[in-house]
Length: 187
Image 1 (cartoon, one colour):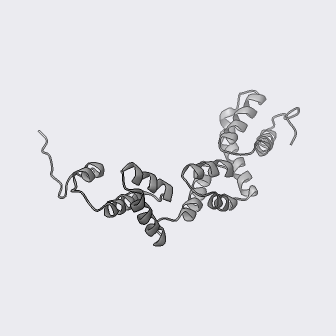
Image 2 (tube, rainbow, N blue to C red):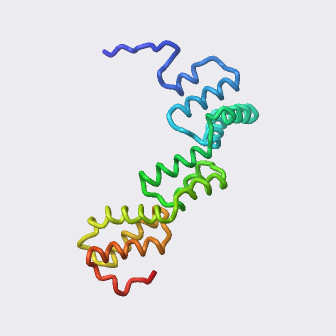
Image 3 (cartoon, rainbow, N blue to C red):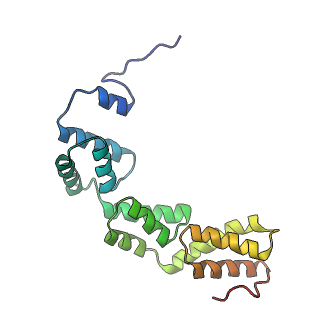
């Protein structure tokens, strides 16, 4: 029979431990929640505000704590947006449009989004699109030309690439492979 280990200060499970703690000052509780959430990964101000609201921290207390965290640099939506764009563009190959959409859902302000996605120039974005198509191209061999075109262009569209760029990149990749692209939509 397994023996239950008692942890000093309560359970190792943070949400259970949070419920078992005696009532705290709301500001202290809000700081603890924010620090715990920021430990794992950077978060936007909106994400932290939503977490505090969900845990029923009064709005005025949440605003005060979040403002202080911004002052000391623990919350920086501009840095978050820049890091998000770099990470998601390199890791997932997402284009500017998809990155902007993701940042909006995270609550990043429009000006900060424009600045962050503006760092990706169209040449770099097109190069990433070419790399994505090159990796996927092999898995489409054996399909007819139109189906390959739809699959590859669809993959780029889901990642936020503009239609014109997607078709141009796919057509070039198919031509380099010796596929006849006569009759496909022009640039």
